[in-house]
Image (cartoon, rainbow, N blue to C red):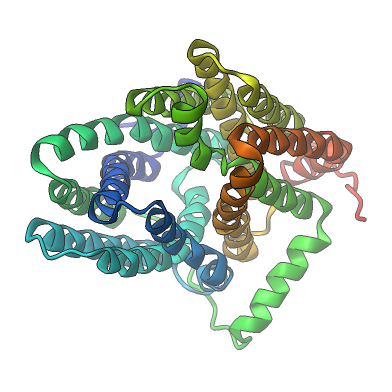
Length: 421
């Protein structure tokens, strides 16, 4: 039975997307529980901030190396089948981690190896998942709403999962969090298997993977709109997103708080992101998103710059909310616009480049932020990140009309050319 076509949940009227939303919602809570438990376990076992960073880097770096090739495979193979396999492998990883943790056999080297494995799985999972969303919604005009609801789901789980994980870790240890995450994958796998997708059979392709990768990169950078969005995403990932690495330092050394202060700051950022996702979810279509991109990045940069100057907890909280809002609106809008203007036979490759631009670049940004903070302090690093984001927003505003034209071209609103540079 179809749900009422209300503005904020209209994508849920599509049966396939509704199944995905429910299954993914359960699974993401487990994912956040595992993330918190993993970091806590590493620090408990080693007491080393260096190894904490190494485990995080190990989980992210595969996205930079393998995601472009994964995008080629997403265009060659059945994306639905890829997603079933990757979710199953992620479940296996969680069960292995849980088994080692619950038996007391786990070491930091196990965690590094398991993080690399999960990062490799995610390299193939994310491009296929993002490219498949367009097939889950029955009406193409509901795609922006579906992407906004995905963002709401991710950040809503970020508010719930860590809270549950913190309680369980304190009472029963980290192993149970890993086990719950493993079981939670069953929900999304069942949802995927229950879908009835109209996927056209892929024609056998004689071209080699590297040739198709080159073709995808050429397609992306020949389009002003796609190229600009990828560069914008990489910029915010390199100089903006690493702010999360510095929040523990801000909480303890700038605001003179403890773990509770850190938790409140992260929660405020998550609430801002949820508000941003809901803000996008109520929009009727993709029109006007190009205007939001530089504004959202400007809001994010302004929030970072202001946060760097705050020494008062009650002032820092709304600033964290502002940064979470700006980052979410910018990243989700990027995703929606790309999904709208890209050719379907290249969707997997373009979404893989997009994934690499914000996930693959992030670990390098985190390393830079840590090194810079050791020299000029966390506030100074946040200030420079905010300034660069503001400058990028101003430069990007010059491309808004081109992107707006290409959106209108692909949605059938007009037929004029958008130009190239």
